[in-house]
Image 1: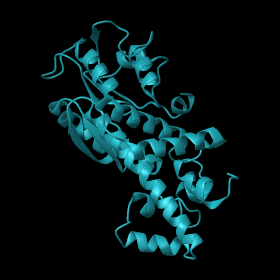
Image 2: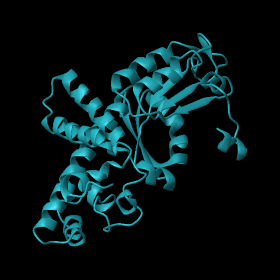
Image 3: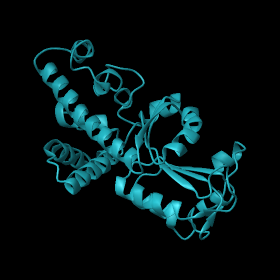
Length: 275
């Protein structure tokens, strides 16, 4: 907060004070418990009772769809202190993002948005000020559902790319050469083309800087827990989710929780545990 204040950005002491001074509030937090505390806590955004100032609340956290839906219902039960256009009650959008730290820096994030479609269109300019695009996913909680499905696919693809590159190296093919094959063939994916896990293949990605920065392994493990829980709730078989969860759980237990999740290549496949 001091860093922002020194730059001339207005700061407040509590989420409630932020809400009292804002028409739109955007949150992005690590887990469902953090989100619930910021919204419903003793000094949370909704602390002021049934009347609140913000007409739009956007949560860009990666959390489970059920929490997003329950929170949206709480928000919509409030009344605006002042009517905003056609809005008499506040609305909430769940709008997690994809692209990671690199896309955030470059303003090329993609937002996956759930909630009232009218609210989505009203907020679209905000999303485009922070990213390259947004996708409307349907009703409340669908943005969160899309994000955990996206991160499940990302985790599994990173494991597949890492294992394949390690196998190629063991068979005598350099990672750079095999990456060229992947990226001009059917194995092409974000993990091979934009976020390669092998040190020395790409610049300006976590694998080029000892896996520092990027998307922490503990957060990927958290997202896989969300995906596994959601799959269990709907009775879906999820063998790859479970296997990926176990691998990232072990990474965390072995002390790599704060390293980028692509460190799975070095820790599981290269035989180099010294991160």
